[in-house]
Length: 83
Image (tube, rainbow, N blue to C red; front, side, top):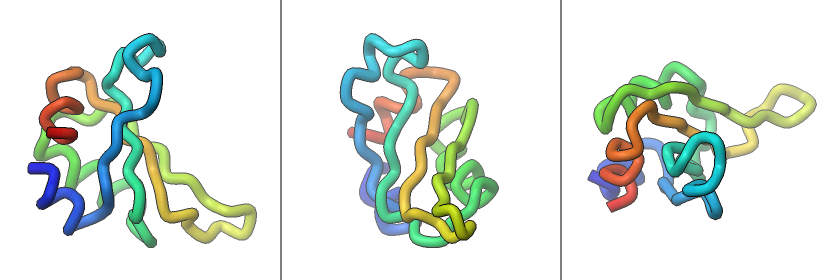
């Protein structure tokens, strides 16, 4: 559930206006990811459903910015994560 996801890698939050965006509410902001990489996040959030993409943002020097975006194939997976 959401609390387990938060304890493990970060805080999931709905992306504002995402219902109208091309990804239709399937994209979730994950804050507090520290130094988690693409593969770690994809594996972890895969427990909620099939992950379409993971965007891990980095600084110019290559260090992690501490947040990411996870997009699911199915909106129900994103909704389950946010409950």
